[in-house]
Image (cartoon, one colour):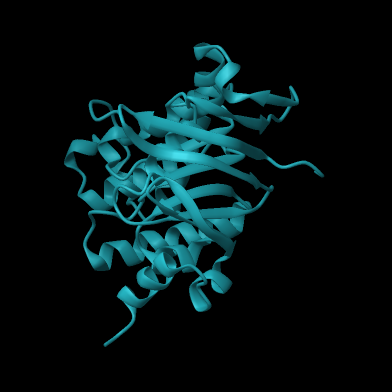
Length: 257
């Protein structure tokens, strides 16, 4: 594929008088993981929601190269078409797994719903695939019929990842996927995500305030401050030789004293 999978041009969003993101443009290529970093309030989650069609920008456009219908403008699609993309070609991993799971149905049903969205109908095959994915995300197979309400926070996050990746999406949006978890649990989730990104050659946009997470998972980095992208480049290049004063401050804040 010679064209980008996702293209943002001049994406701008305000909330009242507050500028959440301003004139953000980039291309995301197949197999690439782009990190968006910055402090709380920098606009990174707003940008992610605009890219995923969850928020409508006031200016700019988001184009996506679909598997079969060519390039589409995400914000010109009908709500039904956007929902179909979200269930089939996209995944979205929320910081709070409760927002990305159906808490009132079993773990197997959470995974099975995504399979049914892409045409799976054989109950036995769906159940077996769900069981295989639980194993892949290090959840015991005998928890297949348990509801996420009985899971720990780390298990819920791993289940949410399985639910999103079982349909082999072409693009995954991740919003602070390890935020709010204990350090030891974070490490397991990161190892899991890194392995799955490599194994399935995922394209992803990852929002995080954690530069360690960004270094581990991303190929390229955009640094946001006050809704504006102040620096971008290859991840190691940005983190090892930051050029903008804000990026230098972020990097310095994680260095050992």
